[in-house]
Structures are given as C-alpha cells and as structure tokens.
Image (cartoon, rainbow, N blue to C red; front, top):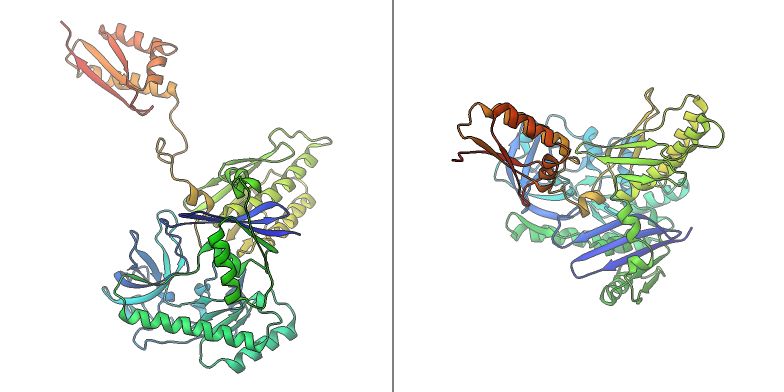
Length: 521
C-alpha cells in the first residue's frame, strides 16, 4: 500500500493529509490563531480548587481556564514524586497505547490512577494562586477548556521521556519478545536517572548509540524547560511542541508513510534540515511540489475534506449514513436509501450494513470523531449476519491508530464504541454553529410561523386599543400571509372588525415578527 503525506503550507495555516493509495484517511490542520495546543507546556496559576470534583481550574493564558484532575497533580511539597507503576498488564498495555497516537504523542496519564496514593485530595496538593508547570493533554473542545497534567512527557523520534515517572514501556506494536527484552535491558543499562521512557514503534532494531543520543537530547530539553520555568511569570508558555508538519515528519514519515510532498520551498528546506538533525541515518523521500494548481486540488483532497463535513454520506450501492455530532457523543444512522437489492430483503440489509461499516470506520478516522460513538445499523434477523457485521467492524477499526473499544451489538441493533480524543474533530476545526439557527439545525416552517402569528394576534386583540393591527415580518412570511395563508388574516379581520397590515422587513430573521397597534382616523 502506497502511503503519502501531502503538506499544504501557507503563511497562517498548515494542512497535512495522509493518503493511502491516493485516498485521504487523516487530515491535520493548524492555524496560528487557534488553540491547537496539545503537547505545549505552560507555567500556570491555579484559579480555583474544586474539592467536590477533585479537580481545579488553571489559568494558562487563554480565554478558557484549563482543567486538571487530582490524578494528574504531582506532590508539589516534595517537588518530585516518581510514580511506580503496578505490575499490572492492563496498566502497562494502556500506557503503551500512547504510541498509537503518534500525531499527538502525549502520555495517557489517566492510566496512572490505579497506582496513585488514593489518600491525596486536590485541596492537599493545590491552593488558589499557586504556580504550577503543566502540559496540555487535550486541547479545548467546544465549551470545554484544555485538559492539563503536571506529568510531563516529551516525545522524540524513538521514545517518549516521562521525567515524573519511574517506568520503562515498549510499544505494543513491537511484537517480537526477544526484541522487546533487548530494548528494555538496553534502556535500563544506559539511563542515568529514574526518568520514565516509552520506546516507540520506530525503536525496533535501534542501536545503543542512537538511544543514548535521543536520551541526551530529551533530557537536555527537560532541563531547559525547568530553567525557563524558574524565571518565567505565570501564566506563560514554557515549551511549544513541534508544528503539525514536523510532528507528521517525526511520527508518520517512514513509519506510516513512504513519501512526503510539500508545496512550500521554505518548509521543504526546513524539513530537510529537521531530518538531518533528528533522523540523519534514515533516508526518506521528500518532494517539493511545484504545480500550478493547489496541491490539495492536484491530489483530489479538497473534495474529500468537504464531504467529511456533511451529515449525509452516500454509499456506492445507493444507501447512506447520517452522522450527527452532539456535545456528548456521535450518533451514526445507517439507511438503505435508494438501494433495493437484487435477491431478498435480508441480503439487501446485510450488504448495506457491510458497506456502511467500511465507510463509518473511514469517516470516523478522517473526521477525528472521538468520545462515545453510537451506530444504529439496519435491523438484521439472522445471527450469522449480525456476527459478520461485527467481525467486519472490529477488523475495520484496527486500521485506526487512536485507541478504540467496540462493544457487542445490542438487542436494539446498536453498536456502542469509544475512541480516544485528544484534539478537536474536523467539523469543530473548520466550522462554527450556524449564525441563523444558532446550531439548532432546524427552523420553524413558514406555515408554523404564520399560525404562531395568528395565535399571538388572538391573544393580544383584547388589550389593543387601536383600530388596526400592523405586523412586521420576514419577506418570505409576508408573502405567505398575502398568499396561501391569507385566510388566517381574513378570518381575524372579520372576527375583530379591524384591518391587519402586513409589512415585510428584509433584515428580520425568518422566525422574527412584531405586532403593533395603531389608530387610523
């Protein structure tokens, strides 16, 4: 399978697309004016401690205060508390799964909960006004502020340094037991402190000198962060993570992709220098795009991105899926649409569901949908059909680097799953709520508005002292009241023996109207 990274670099926006056999499967977008800050390290100030939630708000210099849980707070009295991981395979496995999120390589510190001292309360660790060093684990999503932690992690090409944890982890993608044992022994023999390390997938077959160089580089970076933290004022940025282009080069190129194509000469030179500095022993293909049309148009990416913003996605058979994003979860509905099948009803449903599985897995990854996801497949009667759909669903989600958990099909034909979310999804990145419907996604119909005006006129008629009504409405509603819904106005004029004047107001919202009384001699 040919995998390519296509980078569109503009002065104020960078877009990176991962293609598999010419089809976009992931897209990363970074803008200067946006809060894509996952991985950044800040010197923050505690704004408010919430004992009832065992959490606190931290000011890191943004409009929204960051949120920190008690499990993510170090014992600041001793200034250094190395957390010993319990020898539990589940904790180990979950921690190592951070390597599955190479685009945002921050450590999953929630898995440390099992090994923390449960006697600690948030009020024992933090006080209002206190200055603390925190790293953004999740950027702000919707109305939720950034999620931060004091357990810092610094990602390199081959490993992740965790200076607050005494732990050695190996990526679960390295499956050879001999190689895993060699890497762990090698790391234990050369580390000079009790810092924690997770060796990433790229570390397979790595030599000792390379590990030493990266340990020295990451340790020096951590020392520089500590030095800057001592003199910086709060709130302020202490360490900025790599840009989206360099994260893609470090985490995807050579591991997930075979080639990188970029349309900026300056960024092309920067990438070449970055590769020489960070990965001098790896020969990678980097190409400068010099075509006349936009690089995303040349690789047919723009259309796929636009399609990923739509609620309804059509399947090749004629069926379709509807994807609804809510605050708490994503709901996906499968429908047969125009597809009527060729043999029998059960086979038609099965084929539609199987085709939907492939498209759903693709859209979830492309849109970066996260949190709770509910999928409503078309009801299937045969157990073997249900098993087949679930087998395809589990297989399709294996391609996703983000941590996912798919639960069995329920009696109602629903599939419940979770997908780890660190950054905002594509819709939240590129779109905002409709200024007209305020994000409701629907408006009152013209007929409903006319009947609402009718009811309000009846309710107010007894209190109006004038001898006529004036109603100002949106032009579309005015047209209805002068046309198809004219009988509503005529009946009221007869009932109250008063004329009713309808005036169109172009600046009105379609649901907006005002009723006035007037006295005509």
